[in-house]
Each structure stands twice: as C-alpha cells, then as structure tokens.
Amino acid sequence: ILSKFPESLFSWTEHTGGVNNDYLKSLVKGGEVASNLNVVITGLCRNIADVLDHSIARLYQTASLFKSCKFVVCENDSNDGTSERLKEHADKDDNFILLQDHSGHKGFSSVSRELERPLYLGSLRDKCQDYICSMANYFHIDYVIVIDLDLAGGWSYDGILNTFAYPLDQWSAMTANGIYYRTQSVKTKKETSEVTERLFHDTWAYRDFNCEELKSCEEVNLYSFERGDPPVEVFSNFNGLGVYNIKDIEGCKFGAEENEDGTVMNEWSYYHREMRMRGKKIFINPSLITLYSPHEFSFHI
Image 1 (cartoon, rainbow, N blue to C red):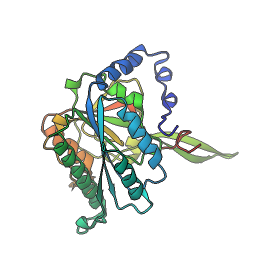
Image 2: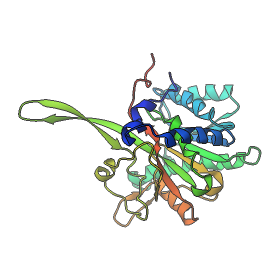
Image 3: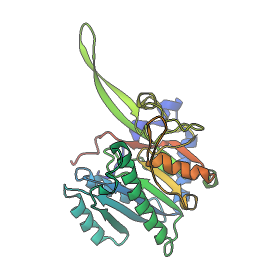
C-alpha cells in the first residue's frame, strides 16, 4: 500500500472518450525500454518523517522498472528524525547513498530570502549531480531521475513507463505534470458550498516554449495537461520529477538569479536554460503525473 499511486484518478479514457490503445501500448513499449536501462534516482528532502515510509517504498517501486538502479538522496537540516531514519536505511542498502548538509543555509545570508532559497537548493542539487557523475566512473548510467521526496501523493509509475515510450533521441528532459487540489468555500445567497479545484502546481519553475518570462501563479495554476496527450516542449518545468539523459546534462549547473523586473529565476529554470544553451530539448509529459495532495494510499492502514 505504501508504494501505490492512484492511477485510476487520472483516467485517459475520460479524456479521449474511450479506450486509448496507443496509451496502453506506450506502457508496454516504455516498460521494454526501461528494463534495459541503468538509472540513478536522486532527490532532496528535509523534515519528511510523515511521508518518509511512502517515499522510500515509491523509490523502490520505481527502481523495479529498470535494469539496475542506485539512489542518491540528499538530506538537509532535518529535526524530526528524518536524518536518523535515512541513515539506518542507507546502512542496510549499499545502493542507497545518503548525502547530508547541515549548514543551516548559512552560505547565502547576504542575499534576499527569495533568492537565497533557490541558490541553496541549487547547491544541494549540484552536490547530488557531482556525486552521480563520479559514480559514472564505475557504474554505467543512462538516465538520472530527479524526484522531490516530500510529494504527499507520490508519482505515477505508468507515467514513467509512458515517458520511455517516446524516442530517446528526441528529448533530453521529460518533466512532470504536477497536480494539487484546492478546496474553497463558495457563498451564494442561499448557501455556502465547498468547491474543489484541480491546479497545476510548480508555477515558479515553469516557462512556456520560446518565453523566458515568469508568468503569474494565478495564470499558470489554470494550465491543464491531460494524461494520454503527447509531450509538450517547454523552456522549463519540473513539478517534482524530471527524467534526464545523463549525456545531455554534462556541464550543466544549478543556480538562481534576479531578473530585471525583480522576479527570481529559480534553480530549475536556471538549469534548464543551461541545457537549452547546449541545444537540448525539455518537455512536460502530461502522463508523468506527480500528486501534491494526499489520497487513499497516503495514509497508513
């Protein structure tokens, strides 16, 4: 139960009006491709004790899709027991590498808080990537899968299989369709009712194709990508999960900077710009769903 994802909540049949045989075939094809690939799954975490068991189970479920897999997890500044539990887990599994940073974000105290956070997170992501690149000296790596380990609802395994069904020479990065649900009270003259909205999540990392402009959260929240639709090329996106061809991220670094209008380019939009400057293509895959809201499998039974 800990590793389950509610695939049925995002049915392609409702969107297409019937059974989408192409989508079903993509899962089979993607599974065949994935079973011949070596991957490293990496991610950051801090104070995730409430979802740690789920995240670990989901990591291993994802790893089972591939020929071989290693994990590189970076934990920073946890004070809820996350650090100790991860150490125990790393001690049991040689394929689970734990990196830690307990500097308390002290390295960026001279910049604004809005810029400080992506700079710090970027430094942690660089730390992971540098370690992974060093692993390549003794372990053949085809793809790096970056996953945020605090995702309350997890990520779609079908979406990962679907990702690898697309020609590998036509994309460098395939990023997630992040979804969360917000419930609001709507008042009328007669009554007050609860309305639940489905929203697109990671508005800070997202950039439309051919546009570096950071759009408003309110606008991007309303974007809707439907499972079964083909990938859409973007300038940047992350939404908690990205699949990267390791050859196409060589030399790319994370960073952050303030734009002329005062907005901030976060670590992912910075990183994806680095990739695009090298001629690489980045996509959002509507079927690669990450869920920021909890669901029936999010709780211990």
